[in-house]
Image (cartoon, rainbow, N blue to C red; front, side):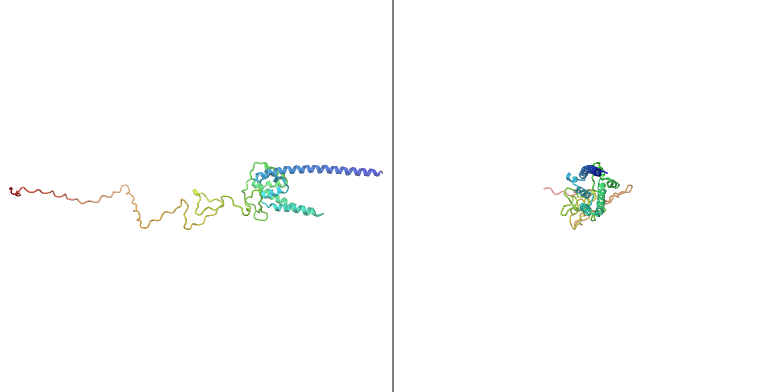
Length: 279
């Protein structure tokens, strides 16, 4: 038996294995690069729909996922904690891979929860989250390039007031409704209470976010709501109105005026009176 034949076969097998591994690694690397580029384009388009500023955000791994969960009303820092825990635990020999699965699964659930909320803001049913769980890149492409519009005015998330709720404010990323505003920031226009005595013109209902005005204490009333003036002291009340008589009823006759006797005619001196003596 030739001992060199064994060495030749062993060397040939090792070279073949290394060649196969290099080809497999190269194909896997190309697929990974393609997935990264396509998903970054989808993230950018989705962020543009949501009003996020800066097209670079979709190209930064980990950070883009943090922006994504923030749009889904979840605290982005918890996702970073889960990613970091999974990486650190995977470095532990032998048992690290097993323990790293726990934060990895938790981060997947976290992303699915965010996808559910993002889908709702794009007018999608909750069943769409199943597609995200199995083919997240396909889900991203549909959400990014369909004709749906971003509408954050949806019911608040069930976890909004828990430790999972988004309470982070980042520049360039719109604050979602229901999230607390940053300290010292001004409220939205139109949310201030109206001045005292102000009412909505035309009978319109009160605008949302405005507080009811306090009761007036001797102040002026709103325009159009003045009370009738009080009667002046010493003034006489107007005479009561008497309606005209009904049809067919006899009208009252004028009161009788007593006749007035005509004056006696003036008397003339009689002819039988003696004339005065003439001189």
